[in-house]
Each structure stands twice: as C-alpha cells, then as structure tokens.
Figure 1 (tube, rainbow, N blue to C red):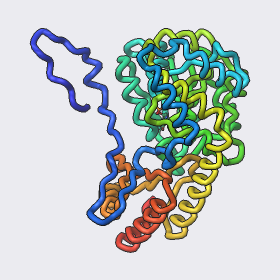
Figure 2: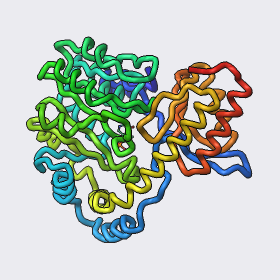
Figure 3: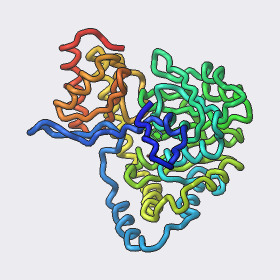
Figure 4: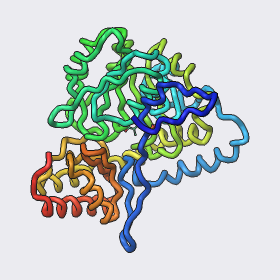
Length: 370
Ligand SMILES: *Cc1c(COP(=O)(O)O)cnc(C)c1O
C-alpha cells in the first residue's frame, strides 16, 4: 500500500508492515508572503494552554531527571472521581491513539478483524495493520454518518473490535444514544466496542451518546477519550480508556512503560481542575462552528452536521483545487485524497478566511458539491 521498507540483507521485517498505511500528519502552516498563515489541518485547539497549566508544566519540568509515576496515580484518580468510575477501570496512554494501539495489541491476533466506519480516523487502519489484523471498513451514508446496521452485519466470528467514532472524524456527525444502544443490544458479547469520543466536549446535539452509562451497563463497551482537543494538550500526548476488566488490565499490560510522562500527567490533572475555564473556550469554538456552518450553507455548500471542532467539504475530485485555494489564502486544511477536505474551527480570523475562500471557490466552480 505504502512505503514498504526494503528488506536489508539478513533483516526480515514482518510482512504485516507492508499493509500499514503511512500516517499523513497535518502540514505545518504556510502562506504566501504578506498573508497570515493558519494551520487548520489537525483539529488542534487554537488557544494556547491556560497560564495556570503552563505554571504546573514549568514546575513539573524541574523533576524530569526522575521517571514518571508509572501507575499514573494522580491523573487516574482524578479521572475516576470526575467520571464516577473505579480507578481500576481507567487506563492511560500516550494519546488516545496510543491507547487504541494498546487495545488492538491486547485483542487482535493476525487475521482477526476490526470493524469501523470509513471515512473515519486515519489511525484505525494503521493500528489494525500493525497487529496483522484485517480492517473491515463500512462506508458512511449520504450524510456522512455511521451506518450502524451495516456495521453490525459486518461482524463475523473473527471480529474482535468494533470502533464507533462519535463525532466522526473527519466528517463531523455523531451517532445518537438511541442508535448506539440499539446497536449494542445486537452486538455479540465477545466483541469489544470502542466508542472513540475524542471530540465529546464539543457535542451539543440532542440525544448525544451517554457513553459512560453504556460502559457501566455493558462489559464489552469501552470509552476512549483524549486531552488533545478540547483540553488543548495535543503536544503532551495523553489519552485514556474507561473499560471493564479484563480489558483495563490488558491495557495496562500493553502500555509503553512510563509512557505518559510526568509533565503530561501534571498538566492533565491541572487541566481537569481548570475545566470550567477551558469550557468557556470550548463554548466559543462551538459558537464559531455554528457561525461557520451557517455561513457555508448559506453560500450553497452541503456541509454535514458537525458536533466536533471541524467541518467537512465533500468535494470529490475538486478537493485538491480547494486545498490549493485555501493555501493561497493562508489556510492549511486537511485534504483526504479525492474524498474531501476537513477544516478545523480555529480563531475567528481563520474562520473568516475560510468562509471567504469557500464562497469564492463556489463562485468560481458553480456546481454544488455534495
Ligand atoms: C484527534 C483524535 C484522537 C486523539 O488522538 P491523541 O492521540 O489523543 O492526540 C483520537 N481519535 C480521533 C477520532 C481523533 O480525531
């Protein structure tokens, strides 16, 4: 599929690596001279960390000659208290991508199957292929939503994990609690359902999944969350799972020892404590999201409902042209081949440029993409 490494004499890489797609990171911001550059390609929080969190980071930096607390005690307890779950049911990792890798490693042997919607998060095919497991990708519907019935139908005896990404990256819609509950009623007990809620703090829609309730009621449900998006700590790499035994314990076994470093642990605890302050920023990003979506739809774009901090343009073959037009205006967006383009809701100025670029693009290319 991609960059298969040449086998050096005597060194035999696993054939499974040939199936591992290379992760395409969001490009750094770049703009023509005189134009302000905005990176809206990685769903990052545009706000810098809170001063109180930066203070804690400075203080923790003074102790990095020591290994971090391997059991991540403080953060684990803080999360358990906040969510009202036993501390043994929390497992942390180096970003929720790290935790997801631990999940697949803990559950999948070569030839096992992982079912997820597509398009969805680009890490899913990577962590699946790394384990030698097979991806079963179930196409989204016309509104860029999960087709949970089709995902249920795709489950076989080899299926070990189903990932439900809600809201879905890169398209934006969430699944509803009602839909998810009906789906879970039908999924065999031996299949672990991972609810990936990287953007849960941005969700405002009706009937949003009450994922912690679903986990409480069902031993085969796991919730995956991160400090990278709403909490603004993408650079520190902290994510966590809420899972029953034996899954939670398996995640501790498959974790990189000391993976969550001491600065990350301290910053995550401080961010949980400062969540009221962070919530104001989340609220203003949500307000900006509403403004952007209304403006784009007003221009004639079909934009799927988004419950996250980004919008999806289903541009098809015109994705490259759109990404180029955005770049000329200073916006680095994320293009997904000839499927579409995802743009992160950023600072107001970046959002204004996005609205302008999208409007101009439609005037120059009058066919309404959908
Ligand atoms: C950004 C994102 C994550 C979080 O990744 P981290 O490794 O925690 O930074 C997880 N899932 C989805 C769907 C995402 O978009």
